[in-house]
Length: 158
Figure (spheres, rainbow, N blue to C red):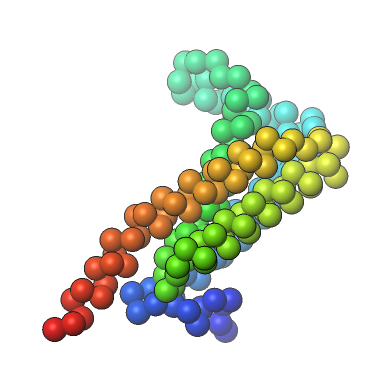
């Protein structure tokens, strides 16, 4: 079975890393959407538990609103990082990275739209926070895999 985009794997790319990154990315997206479908009460309970855990670990009281925004950024940074790791296995260019960023923004928009179905309401600020998180994860993944990409062709010429 071939995964989408797998035919564009680069000589330095790993089919296993590509597939694993895509599967983990889909699992992360599913988890994000499942959290978005929680009722307002369920969502507040989860946030409250996490805030209490962080308070025990750090000894500091954290604002739940800030904690929610950080959660948005972190979950989308993970998603962007996994997408970037998959993209890094291909012979990618800036257009491919921008297309992936567009998918990240679409995922953020759909995430907020799902919150409307759960009765929680949506916030355009969260779409931008999600997109910024996705962009940060994507940039880090591509930056950390870039030296491998550049070095891959240097040892093959002579």
